[in-house]
Amino acid sequence: MKFKTAEEIMIPLYKYPNIPKWFTIRQAIQLIQHFTINVNGKESLPRSVFVTDEGNQVVGMIRRRDILRGLEPHGFFGRKAHHPKLYVEIEPDLNLIEVAYDHLCNRCLKQADEPVEKYMTPIEHTLNYDDHLLKIIYMIDITGLSHLPVVKNNEVIGVVRTVEVLGEIAKMLEIE
Image (tube, rainbow, N blue to C red; front, side, top):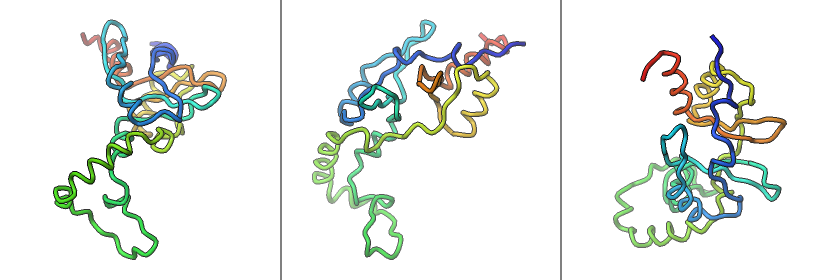
């Protein structure tokens, strides 16, 4: 049995959303909300957007989770409430959101205009274009990522998502 390669099951880069690193969170949200990925007649929204540099090279991705993190008011929630004179870990009190709701909403809206580069996830794990399905499954498992960029000649050429991987496994198992 021959397993397909990453290049055979990937979504080509030109069919996947990407934005320059200086674009804003607002622009990333707009792209994610309006971009449709069509693979084998099935449509879906992207889970992330690739982020490119000045030379149009992919340097990271901004996932929906990264966008939400970027909209959190800085210094309010526990993992972001860093201060040089803070000597103890303080758990956030989510009830305070109700008290400061209007203020926090305004801060959230302002943060939507920050660049995606500030919140993107740098590309640390990739697949080679000729990696077979078993290696793809392994890489998805060990990285905990739901999609991985595919590289050929040191350049990102596409992305493999778990949905395509499961589709290939279903074909192998003759599941319709």
